[in-house]
Image 1: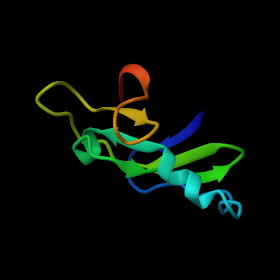
Image 2: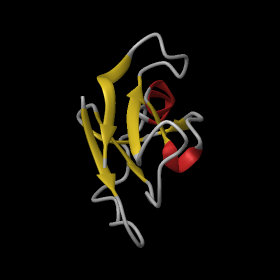
Image 3: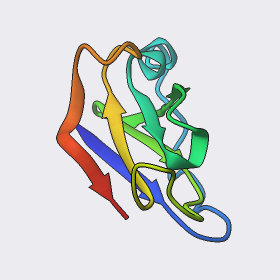
Length: 87
């Protein structure tokens, strides 16, 4: 899995549009973290099995500083990395 995470003010443009047929794959990888209250936010397919998301990390939550995970199905069955990734 490749993920591009852009943090800060504004996001870099997507280098290319998703290939036809890959749009449905985007809903299979989700960003979860402190920027979205650990909700599920579908990532965008870029190319060759790569996905991206644009997030702004401003602070953490009651459990710690700003951090995230990538969730395969949006239900925590399979998420990466094993521990939250601190930003």
